[in-house]
Image (cartoon, rainbow, N blue to C red):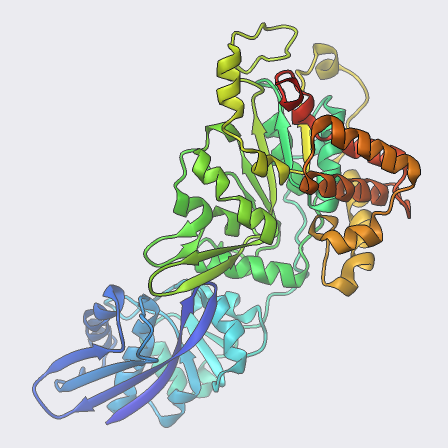
Length: 513
């Protein structure tokens, strides 16, 4: 007998349908799987056999052939266990004809329990265009699949429950989509800018970066608060809308990082990899390409602490995603593209001993050591960082007293207002923030008066800025004007944007070599 069911598999962050054909025929007992199955799929025969027996059904002692179409794409996912098991039961008459109207995903235990799998959200998104009436998923993935709301999703605990549902549709009800907005309130006790004393200039730079989704580099001695400030940046970013939350959730689902407590990523990601991370860990890749940290930070923040300690070739790989907002990974068999639109926030010491420019600690570095340290960061990479700000040591007076610092909620309100201005201005062009503007948008929305042109010309000539740096100064100035509620970029806005080209002004910076 022949049975045909549907399942789904992943290519990058996208899903494609897999037609699972099961043929149970007379002959010597054999279990053959064709259609380019990889290791996890080849091993499913032992899991399926034990799961069927331990669920109380007879496993056919016949010649079983499993075909996974399309046959020219490799399949390597334990999520095909469930459709294979149901297909065998359908071919032997244990489940009715209606079984072929559903899509199945799930890994089987030997006792018949169904374990959660990766990528259910991507399959649920794509299944809206496939000829299926519902999705049968592991119970722990049901809420994740129901987020889309396009196809009914049924969560099951074990194989016996699937058979009961297929024979009696009243046994299960569809999982309702999660309620509430995509954005979630920050948990009680979350980090807040009100806990940071001093560093008003750096807080202002972080506010500008958040308002325009600009990249930021903080340079200062140890203990000045660089990491503390960076970790509070997500608390002033606007909440995710549903489209952004869905994109972010898909990436985390495919990577197996989606928390079981919630089916949707509701807060902007904050990823902080160690400087010993590998190329594939940061950018993505592997034998079966998976998203890296730059993709896991999509719609959020990628924080690189101790930036010069990362391998130089690793930092150079960031140039493409910073420019394009995506990562392309090419292999002999296929090429994949992962989204990687993130804010880069980095922190570094001003020199190897970390005390260059600190009045309390003399710097012990030689000019050669300083040059080697700075040369770890290439000019093209620094050109892609919009704001470069110095983080000085905080005095005791600032730590002990002074006015109460602003809370994150207050700063976030200003950021959201500035983002709304950008959305209204850039929506006709398919853009969302000032950092995404191209040259044609700069000419239209970043026009300067004569005084502004003179100031920018002086800065460009003095610091030897590239055309890219020139454009990024204009983008930051436009964001500062949006925070001020101004229609046009004033000289004061431009002057503040120029101040954030901090690396050129540090002792030992480019203008002093």
